[in-house]
Image 1 (cartoon, helix red, strand yellow):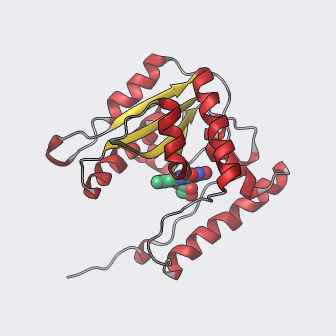
Image 2: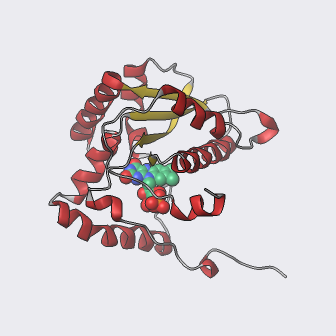
Image 3: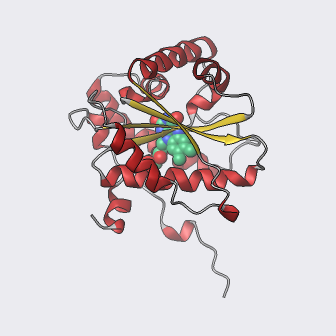
Length: 217
Ligand SMILES: Cc1cc2nc3c(=O)[nH]c(=O)nc-3n(C[C@H](O)[C@H](O)[C@H](O)COP(=O)(O)O)c2cc1C
């Protein structure tokens, strides 16, 4: 497949088949993800790959934490969001609605509990960053995440970045024995997409390019 096709086709997948992914394939994807550029080639990415019964345990623990604390998606804005961004999020949720109606599920519950369970994917990847790094190294993590999701798509696998779980970082660190000095930045669900589930037909839109650019000539 060529890169442009992969970039255009990739989308977040929110229902997976339970079929396991061979360890070699996961390693192949991560080997390509670490080719992402990083400042001074520091390569700050750290992956924790959780599979099998441990992944199920993680999902159960996070759903329990979500039910107790009810911290919804996108916590952590430092100021009220400018309208442009709020509108984009609201529009995306609106466009997702018919798919959830077809599935007969509550959108809030599906997204929050689904995220906590990595949408049933057989593999949960947590990307961590040593806490000695400044915030600027989040850029490097984002690049690695980008490479990861595109590479997975090339191999016919689906992904969904899962930021919601970071609200329950303490639970994750406790369950998976992650050292205190490592921050869990983002999770990723990885698995074979279940194309029979309506939400996987959803493709999110993007605003027109002019909204993103200010040319200075
Ligand atoms: C940093 C980050 C965190 C995200 N967290 C979640 C999440 O917790 N749950 C979820 O369902 N999707 C999550 N997503 C997926 C976004 O909702 C998705 O990327 C966005 O709607 C655009 O859709 P697309 O990935 O299909 O192009 C996250 C994406 C990113 C980049």
